[in-house]
Length: 239
Image (cartoon, rainbow, N blue to C red; front, side, top):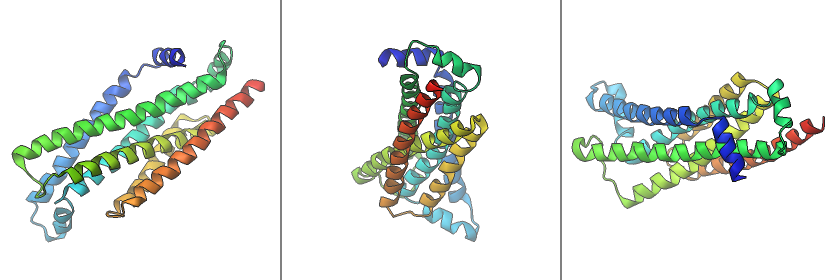
């Protein structure tokens, strides 16, 4: 299996996706400071709510994870489109089935590579964003809040939950695109399926079990889709 993963990585370079991860992290940092700058400088009474919301680390943590979820789920959709949809469409599919390796194993490797990359990229990006942000807070201190061990635990828990949620949603979106053999459908599905739950989570601040519930549901459905896809590839081989 490890050799298959190495071969898959040689066929589909991850460099562009690593660079994309860096851009996502940079964009997150810029976005957060832009929001904070606007909230501290504005004198418009209608923006008092924004000031209050962005006055604690819990909201920043949620904001980072919501945006990260949408970005990395969409990135996973792009990767699945390249790793799976393109590979199992037209003449490329015939080439895959001619390999002296079980097509099911090839599909498993592709799913593992993309889902693991999404999960790890999400976590590493979050670590980078939080590190830069908290170092910056030591010098400019925009947020009138104190970073505690409890808040660091919240960061770890929320990041793990949302990264797993993102990986699960990515697989679900890929299955939708696979059924249509469409790259655009895969990417649009990934974006849409991440935006809607993320918007719901953003409106459920303080309900700590809700993101966990969505994560469990997405992972379970993702696992079902995983098994279903392997079975589908087996049927394609038989035909």
